[in-house]
Image (cartoon, rainbow, N blue to C red):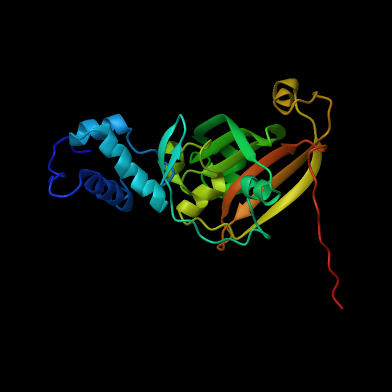
Length: 246
């Protein structure tokens, strides 16, 4: 960000000018959706204005729905959300909120790594191509629900590297960057975890868990995401609808 005062003309309220500077940087992609903007202190120092003025400018954009303030973390850029049919395809947070419960997640790992042979084959990419690996514990009303591993090709959403996944869900990020998930294929098995992972779900390593393996595709049949979720059966409640023709 330019450290000079050239963007401030002092002819109109400064908080409104700062609001428009931040808006422009969002529109130009300098502040991408899902990432944090500079702190109040940094903005005040950059533009030579006081922090109250900065706070008022940010508050105006929060009220417009362009920014989201997270207590203890900072201020984040929101993307434009599209309407979705939640009855057919939804993420963990969406599913839980529909049940009038509170979802949350703890990120255990987030890294960028080569796809390797296995995931290169799943995503139909070169084994040397980069993929994001995310490991997290999902909670419902603060009770551990599932241990999930998610794999996403770097080319699908490169901005993911700078996005705080404790603030935004993966499906919110897909919305921000217009990534369409057309359909998914899911399998269900039983599994057990070693004790180092089982402890995150407050279960013993001998406890049978539901293993959901999910592969998500876009309309062009390209794989956008691959995930495995180990879910406590005592916390899960699933329904499948069947219909007959004739």
